[in-house]
Amino acid sequence: MSKPEQDAALRCQQLEQENADLRTSLEMLRQDQEAGYHVQKRLLPLNAMEHQGFRLNYWLQPSLYLSGDFLDFWSPKPGKLLFYLADVSGHGASSAFVTILLKYIVSRYAKEDDLSPARLCTRINEELLVGGLDKHLTLVMGCLDTQTRQLTYTLGAHLPVPLMVSDGEVQELEGSGMPIGLFPGAVYKDYTCTFPEKGCLMMASDGVLEVLPGEGLEARQKEWRLRVAASGGDLESLLQRLPGEPDNWPDDVTLMTVSGF
Amino acid sequence: MSKPEQDAALRCQQLEQENADLRTSLEMLRQDQEAGYHVQKRLLPLNAMEHQGFRLNYWLQPSLYLSGDFLDFWSPKPGKLLFYLADVSGHGASSAFVTILLKYIVSRYAKEDDLSPARLCTRINEELLVGGLDKHLTLVMGCLDTQTRQLTYTLGAHLPVPLMVSDGEVQELEGSGMPIGLFPGAVYKDYTCTFPEKGCLMMASDGVLEVLPGEGLEARQKEWRLRVAASGGDLESLLQRLPGEPDNWPDDVTLMTVSGF
Image (tube, rainbow over all chains, first blue to last red; front, side, top):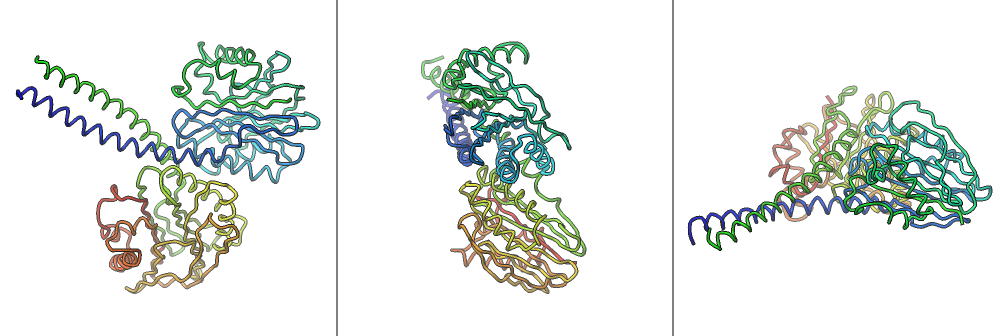
């Protein structure tokens, strides 16, 4: 073997060793994150749930392993459906921590409370600030009376604004609110509307806006609205209308629907 | 360049590219875990704290980035010091999730409760089981009356058994208890003792036993006891008596002392 050949062989050998070491470290962190996500997934509700004429569906894709997006829905009392979708600032492990706490806080207060989403948000805001995790979140939370079809909801600075799809029309839910966990004493407001017959409420985390084309928030929200309209409120159909590969999306993306049938 | 030289150069090039890709992936996961640990660290108490004649110190080293060990101490009422050291099954992200929840549950109940460690543990046990995270923990929790020097404590299957160092003697705290988050309806018991003048209570997570020499738990606990005795209850001195490099220890290791002065 010539001298340059020997040098090259040696260099290859070194690189192979380095690669093997890197793979080992990477595998260790991957397994750790996967174990974490396994725990986090246990906290998500069963997909899909049907309850007294309504169906709840979701699709959640973390950008790394652990998710800063979170959602939950259940029937805390006969005739009531409580649901929320939250998006914690950032993504990954640090944000995932907050989702665990969020689930715990909401479950706890939803037992005591009169199921006012605004009051629940006030409580979450207080608890997150006391907790000192230095993380905030945006959130849409609703409580649906399945008999009267009255939907009471609150919006904690959540984007994109939830859309109600009904009879081929798409309407933004009215209202506004502050992010949760940022401002002491922040006050949230309950809004109400009637859930339309065969209507569908479409919610998403803001990661979805990042994958849509357009310059600026306005343009992307418009794109979002167009695609939701074209999907007719169907989750699968909407997913097919989003560009690119979910695995490569830069932020966590969550879609969630409440549909009346 | 000869054909074998060309082949070797090409192989090197491929390996370098793979190497760079692996480094990028690894760096992304590392940063994520570090951000998570940054959040987790915010939940730890200030080291060290002095309060009415007592000092609390600790040293915590996660084996990866995120820690399944956790501790806290504070004065919930004048004249009372509450402290605990917990070791969640496993380590890393999935266990770290539980530490966040633990801090939240204990802070919450310690406000309402009469500061009985046993009753606090009963509550944590219930909440963890309801939470459905499928994780359990061992724990030592104490409440110290700084006036009477009465220490009320409970032991949730925690190893090594906490040691009281006083006048050159080392004594195990009496008592036993079940792990937390495994058995519905598990009952915990409060034990009491008088905290000796200038005594020091030394607690540790079971990771410390893994770094000590000896075959089996008994032998390692004996080693632990010997080293604690030799350190006289001083944290720095004890650390120097543990073998190997903390960075390479296989499990999270936490040491914590409560000393009277």
